Image 1 (tube, protein in one colour):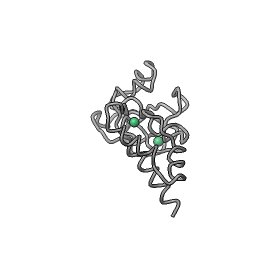
Image 2 (tube, protein in one colour):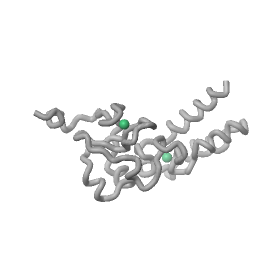
Image 3 (cartoon, rainbow, N blue to C red):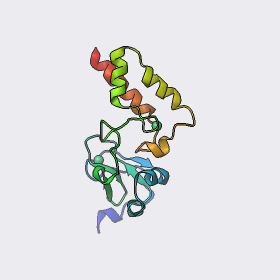
Image 4 (cartoon, rainbow, N blue to C red):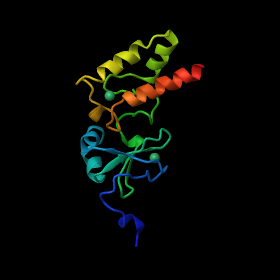
Length: 148
Ligand SMILES: [Zn+2]
Ligand SMILES: [Zn+2]
């Protein structure tokens, strides 16, 4: 019997069919924001986001069906490092680098503040449907550590 069909359909932790990274579960609301109706219909709930920056798979389901980066209308972070980290407010890596170069995290701090307000729409604006604060903080710290 094909192994793909003996897996539990309600299994929540799934692994990317291409790179093997543990997927992050995404809600239908997020999928609808990024995919066409046709693409949404072709992928089964629960869908997962592959968090690996180097992998071309953006979304996949438990049957190994995948939507690739070049099938999306625009680049998404972290697949595309030049895409805004926070699509809600348009903060990019360059903004963070500039903050650090200037020695004052003005842009970064403004986004972290706004992220706590209802203006943050990460559910529809971030490819993984999660708050982009984690990515913003991670990249900020990465840059700070690189300076040491
Ligand atoms: Zn992957
Ligand atoms: Zn956001």
